[in-house]
Amino acid sequence: MKKFWVVVLIVAVLALLALGGTAGHQMTTTDAFCSSCHAYEKASWDHGVHHSVGCLDCHTGGFVRDKTQGTRKVYLVFTGQVDPHHDRLASYPDITMSNCIGCHMTEEVAEKNPIYVERHSEYLVAAENCIACHEGGHVKEIRDKRYLAVRRGEQ
Ligand code: HEC
Ligand code: HEC
Ligand code: HEC
Ligand code: HEC
Image (cartoon, rainbow, N blue to C red; front, side):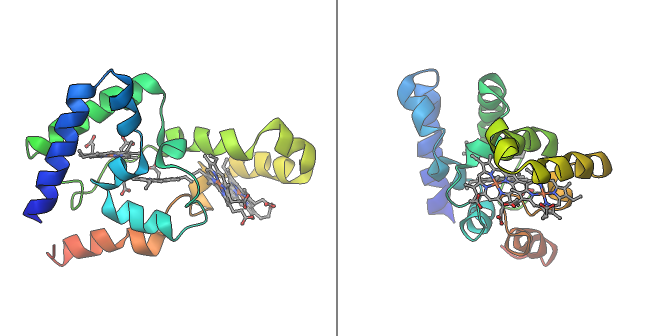
């Protein structure tokens, strides 16, 4: 476990140094970078229907939000305030949902499959968001393992 954090530290320091530069931007937007802190989410994503869709395709809240939240997260991890592998993390399904819509509710889709879009506008009146009915990016059973591990006090 120690070794892992050393790797994360090196990656994060490099990322901070390069922040604002193109290289830093590219490195901090890769799935591998995200997975260095979010192993359970990575595993649950690997086994889902969306393994060909990048983490940020679903989780971006726009460039500015991504960069401020990203920097804040690195700070929280290295000051020991949040352990992303064990702590319950905040969730913003609304941000994620606007990205779901960006792929699945386009004009192209509406043209090809008008009934689906029509039905879904009704669904969305009844339900708060897509993940009320769909698994989204992560197989729930696998993702939940981290919470079960926390409850049992395991690593
Ligand atoms: C240095 C470790 C670290 C890295 C790398 C990292 N995260 Fe996080 N992540 C965290 C921490 C810590 C939190 C909890 C933040 C909080 O409490 O506000 C978090 C929270 C989240 C959340 C839930 C809250 C939110 O902001 O929506 C999502 C989604 C998320 N991360 C996705 C990602 C993605 C996508 C990437 C890659 C671009 C990534 N993370 C890279 C540590 C990390
Ligand atoms: C970057 C584009 C993209 C984003 C963002 C995205 N998806 Fe997908 N989605 C896909 C692709 C590609 C597939 C797999 C191929 C297919 O079945 O169309 C897929 C498959 C699906 C399926 C299965 C469809 C089937 O026929 O079984 C559902 C349901 C789904 N997505 C819902 C969501 C939800 C909910 C979100 C947001 C949490 C989301 N998607 C975000 C591209 C995306
Ligand atoms: C109230 C439940 C409900 C909500 C909310 C919901 N869906 Fe669905 N979705 C379904 C059902 C049921 C089906 C299969 C039959 C159908 O198309 O109506 C489906 C089918 C799909 C499919 C597969 C379509 C196909 O034929 O290939 C995709 C993709 C999808 N939904 C994406 C989304 C996205 C994105 C959202 C959020 C914007 C969302 N759904 C919200 C219930 C829901
Ligand atoms: C198809 C869309 C999609 C993809 C791709 C995706 N996620 Fe998610 N993710 C979601 C949804 C939906 C949620 C639940 C609502 C929310 O928090 O946004 C979620 C929740 C999370 C959370 C919130 C904390 C938690 O554990 O509940 C983290 C962290 C996260 N994802 C990281 C990742 C990482 C890392 C990747 C890439 C390896 C990834 N996600 C790929 C849709 C996706």
